[in-house]
Each structure stands twice: as C-alpha cells, then as structure tokens.
Image (cartoon, rainbow, N blue to C red; front, side, top):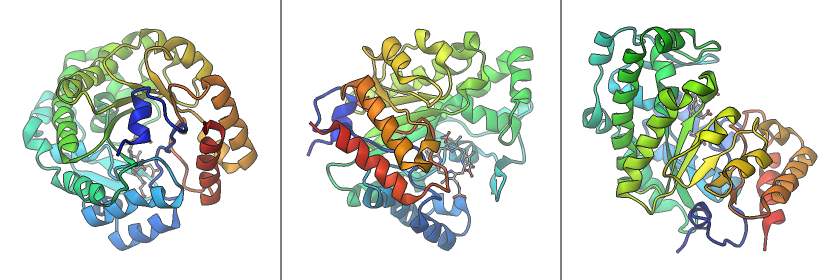
Amino acid sequence: MSKIFVDACFGKETPYTPVWMMRQAGRYLPQYMEVRAQAGDFLSLCHDPKKACEVTLQPVDIVGVDAAILFSDILVIPDEMGMDLEFIKGEGPKFNDPIKSEADLNRLLGGEEAASRLTYVYDTIKLIKEQLADDKALIGFCGAPWTLATYMIEGEGTKTYNICKKMMYSDPELLHKILAKVTEVVKLYMQKQIEAGIDVVQIFDSWAAAIEPSKYDEFSWKYMVEIADYLKAKYPHIPIIMFPKGIPAFLDKVYGNFEVFGVDWSTPMALAREKLGEKYILQGNMEPCRLYSKEATTECVETLQNIMGGKRHIFNLGHGILPDVPVENAKHFIAECHRVSKK
Ligand code: CP3
C-alpha cells in the first residue's frame, strides 16, 4: 500500500497534506508518562524495544498523525561510542567525560563498532513495523554531527556553545576530526535503521543557529549532505528530511541530494518557499506554542495552507511539542491540517 507521507515527500499528488509533530511521542501524553514510569528512567525506555515500540505508536492512535517517529534519542550515538550518557531529571542530558583532546576522541569507538551496538534501536524498528498500519510511515532519525558534537564537547546543553566554539576557531582540525568520526557512525547507523525497516530519514540539526552563517557549511551542512549522499546512493526510494533549526541567513546556500527541507518556526514559510520551494518539499512550520490555543492553531494552519497552496508541503510544528500542551489541542492541530488540505 502506498504511504501518503512518503508520496508527499516525493512531491506526488496526495488526497490531503500529511502531518506529524516533532516530539510527538512524549510527555504531553498521559499514556507516555505511564509507560515511562514503568520503564524507570528515560534511557531504560530507549533500551526496551517493546516499550519504545508502544510509545512510538501512541501518537498515531491518539492524535491521528500520518507518520510515526521512532522513539529514541539522538544521543544514543555518543553513548554507544563509549561516552557515559545520563539524563538528569529537570536538567536534561549530561556526559561526565566530554571530549577535550584528540586522545579523548581516539578512545571512542567509531564506524561499524559503534553502529553495531545499537541493536535495541533496530529491534524497536522491527517491532514497530509489525504493528504500524500499512498506510502510515515510520520516520527514523539521527542528530546532525554538529548537534551531537555540541553535547560531546560541552558535556551538556549550553546557551553559549563557548567550549565548542573555542575549538572551532582555535583548533578547527580537532573539531573536524570529531565531526568526521561521528559522521561515519551516523551513516552506518542510518543504513541499519533503513535495513531494519524505516520509511523516511530525518536529520535534526537542532543547534544549527549557534554557527555563524559563513561557517555553517564547513562545520555542519557539508557533513549532513555527506550522510544524505551516502544513503541516497544506496536507498533512493527512502526520502530524507533535513531539519537545520534557525538558519534563515543560509537559505540561499542550501544544496544537496535530499527531498524535504524542514522549516523551523522562526523562518517565514513564504520566504522558505521563495528560496527553496521549487527544489525541495517544505515541512513545517507552526510555532509550537500556538498549540496552547485552538484559535491560534487554526489561524496558522489556514495561513500555511494559503502560502503553500496544498502542494509540495508537509505540515509540522516548527520545533518540538512542549510537555504541557493539552492532548485535545494536539488532536485539533492534526484534524485542522487534514480539513484545510482535503481535496
Ligand atoms: O516523538 C519524538 O520525536 C520522540 C523521539 C525523540 C526524542 N528526542 C525523545 C526524547 C527525538 C526525535 C529526539 C531528538 C532529540 N533529542 C533532539 C533533536 C530534536 C529537537 O527537539 O531539537 C535533541 C536536541 C535531543 C537531546 C535531548 N533529549 C534533550 C536536550 C533532552 C532533554 C529535553 C527535555 O525536554 O527534557 C532529551 C530528552 C528526551 N528525548 C525526552 C524525549 C521524549 C524527554 C525525556 C523524558 O521523558 O523525560
């Protein structure tokens, strides 16, 4: 059976414009909180294919999205390269042993050695595919090497990125060695996700905006394109979504062999359409906080529909859904996207 979501990624006619939400399998759903409580901590949930499968499927059943996104985290990569990942309640992810030198980098596992340790992710994908309806797509994902490197170098989330930017300007060779090693792992990781059954790839560059526009290609985009080229050469039928968050100044320079460009909420959709709409399908981009109000949601969905004309578009939020959004409002967003775009 053809999947509306995959057809839309390739620019084919679909009966309506498909929609999913970044972070759709998460804390705003009471059903997620229940499974999360049984699992204990967040990483144990990622390591348990049965439970990870269950929470992946929840938003498909509960809010009616057209695609499921694999439940995992971008940081399982550095974890399996040998860094010690912890999720601290109320603080977020933490590595106690950030990379400070080439010797630290050399201690980490690379390529196949690291990618083959992520069996729990591949097992989760296989379970999901057994249970997901044939007309729904499963999105697999990874972090962009730059976004992963920010955590590997800083050891945690950061507001200033001063440690990795110090490396960018004072020891760019070391930063490139880190990015190249992560890129090799991510290529094989995504290849294994595809072999396990995902239908679509999304690459998240959540911290793209930390890099000045003139350096963005050198330190992030070219590595994302390298991953896309590697996957496209082997799996041309698997669409790739690139999501670099917050880089309107780079829109003119976007290049690469992929299908969908994810537009974040700070970039006007009309601008993205003008710059990229002919080359790529555009995904996005409602401000996630509009979900607090049904009226504000409807207004945005209608505006997006007017701008895109129901063509070469996938509805989504312009970043992740927040934990205190009422489920009813999330359902309203999905229903409105389907209503305004139905042909
Ligand atoms: O539906 C989905 O999208 C679920 C799968 C998913 C998670 N993380 C689960 C998660 C995906 C695609 C991610 C990607 C991810 N992880 C990104 C890129 C996307 C983005 O939002 O920008 C980033 C930067 C991370 C790193 C990360 N993971 C952070 C900074 C945090 C803490 C933030 C927070 O809200 O607590 C996480 C934890 C995390 N990853 C949670 C979930 C559901 C919350 C953990 C919990 O249940 O307590």
